[in-house]
Length: 350
Image (cartoon, rainbow, N blue to C red; front, side, top):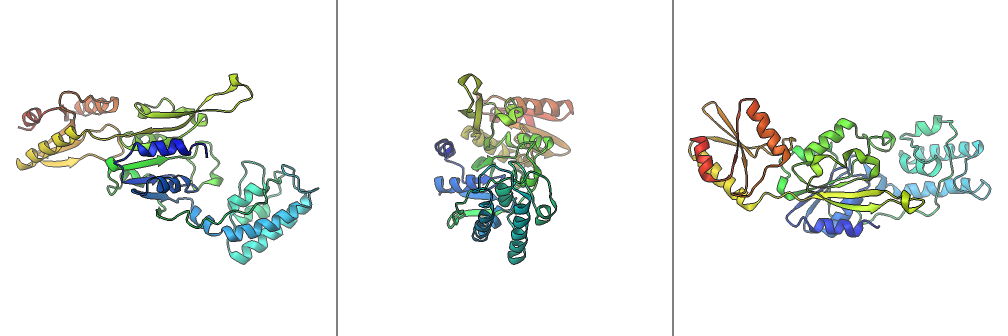
């Protein structure tokens, strides 16, 4: 587990995060390790692909594995990476049929990795039954899978569309860390309930821009390397293996950013909002909107709407996205301002 130390170091840079969300769930490995390393935090595993059931069925899957391994031994000593003969395919199908009838369940993704050529997956028993193509290959390792036992201990397990976590106000933006390991654009949907589209990835990049995140990637998703949401982020770089040193590429392993509102900014925002409310203004906190860089607050009174971005007195600077939003709102004839001091705010809403 070469990434473990880097992952541990990354988690230590988020001491104020009380919730950690493994947004794209997968096998739950990120959530499991986060729970081990940060027992002080609530760790949420989004088991969208229902991996929990696959874990619970490991004893049954191991039983099936033994039977199929015995059949594959008939292939000239069970040589791996060899095409499976038709007569053995027929026998394997019968074993799969019997297993499905007995338990009412078949871990199709796992079974596919045993007997289909790399990258091919079936999601239902019927696909195994009907398929006659020639990519049945012996890829099975005979060792049984270990029982997970305490693997899920301490995790909050949910099944939600990934966008929910960015829009649900129950997750405090400043105290939530999003672990993001989405499928690549070209990932075969057979191995996931829903593969990412270009629009999905665009939405994700927009949502993560104003949040604490750790984004896992590599050179296969090079499209995201120069996206502005990664400005100011820390990058962990790994060398990609190659035939020779000259062929090795930089392979980004994970990119993370810790965004916390400066305490002086918080104090200024709190003081100004109290002042506005005392004078009859309605104040709306603009967070979890899914729009990176939108101003901090909207103040409403007597048909007036004022957008305000609060900055550290004397030193706070606007990001590219914050400047974009202020300019866009101004073009639409709204009042949109950056406020550094209480005096500026009083003048703005007088």
